Length: 247
Image (cartoon, rainbow, N blue to C red; front, side, top):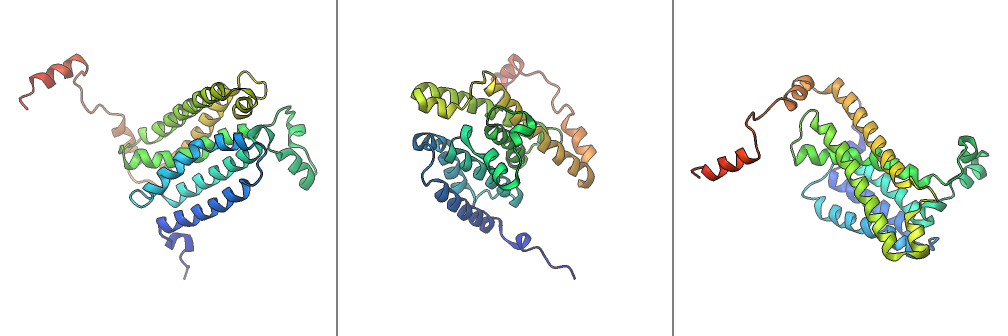
């Protein structure tokens, strides 16, 4: 008789608390002597908001263990980037020391690409948790359950680039340069947004492929999601209907 998976028997709230404890340990370890304390503090401005939201919502709106795991992995990657500053994460030195090869040399890279990895992972790892919000709160169905997570990932990536630019402009100097982390690439923001979008697209295509195989009634739900729900024009027509409504 097959035994039940331990994680499968664990409540979502308990799983969240275990991952939270693990993240807190990672946070404490990487908070010790970061490369640039001021940049480290800036990198945690949005993280603090996110952690507060997650802390207040996990009981009322628990996510799947898959979503919690994906968020945890992304947050750990962010902590590594914040500790070293993203443009100075020594991934290549690590590979040379422990595996005897240089990834930068192999790929012909002249810059540190850890920030590119994290932007790609932003889409790849967080698009699925975003999908949970759309399905469970906005009741997105069919096509829209895959398109909206991709769209929000792209939009939030753009918003972060604007936030990053504004923050760098406000603080200026070496701190602004360290936080922005363009490393001299004038297309840095565009590439970051492109990689986040690519990651989200891959995540949604994988989710789509799985659901095509296992979801009953997939085709009918997909078709229904793209059908016209109300053939009446909106705009001024809807304003007139609202004004003339007996209610």
